[in-house]
Structure formats: structure tokens, C-alpha cells
Length: 82
Image 1 (cartoon, rainbow, N blue to C red):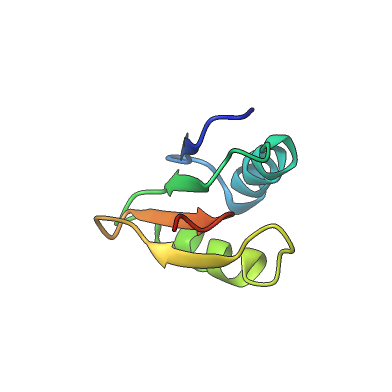
Image 2 (image 1 turned 90 degrees about the vertical axis):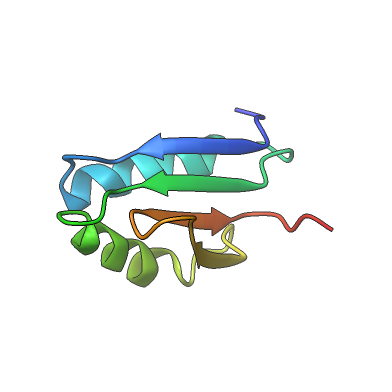
């Protein structure tokens, strides 16, 4: 996968299922991938948002974690855009 911006829909997934999907995306992310946009939802997705922040905060590929345009989206920045 060498797309610059990748969207992953995590609606309805458990934390373990979502982690597997995110891990696969991180492994397959090429050098041209800038960030992963994780769509987890707002009402029931807050536990996924918390898991993403806790689990991927210290991942070697993730430069930083930032909120998306709405509270149901979290972005993992893999490479900075200058």
C-alpha cells in the first residue's frame, strides 16, 4: 500500500479486531504513506479512540497522533508534510 492518505473504518469492531486492522495497515504502509485516518465513531467509538492513543503512542512508525475533523476520527501521522 503506497497511498499517501489511508482511511480505515473501524465501526463495530472490538479493540482487538481494530488493533489487528491497524497493525496490518502499519506493516503494509509504504514510504509514500503520510497518515492513517482511523474512523471509529463518536458514541460507541470512544473506547477505540482511547485504545488507539494508548497503544500506538509509542509505536516506532507513528510520529504523532492527532484528532480528526470530528470527534469520531483519529489520525496516525506516519510522515510529516512540510
